[in-house]
Image (tube, rainbow, N blue to C red; front, side):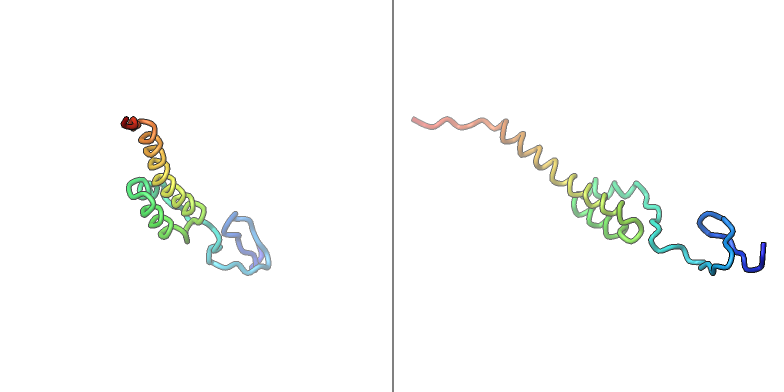
Length: 96
């Protein structure tokens, strides 16, 4: 290898004549733990907002999914309870 040769930090292939920066690409997503799903699981929409705010710069897609999970985990059970309540409450018969 020549003196001007360097190695690509992503794949390790030799790269000649290019100046390589030692900084990782800014658009690379960092690892976000799956344990973050516990926050919206326990705190609903508020937990989804907190998990999104903490992780939005690390992994935007995972942060969006955490927010959506918090929304769904809040509203879907409320809708189900409302439907069950609506169909199980006895109707009052009109008085004569």
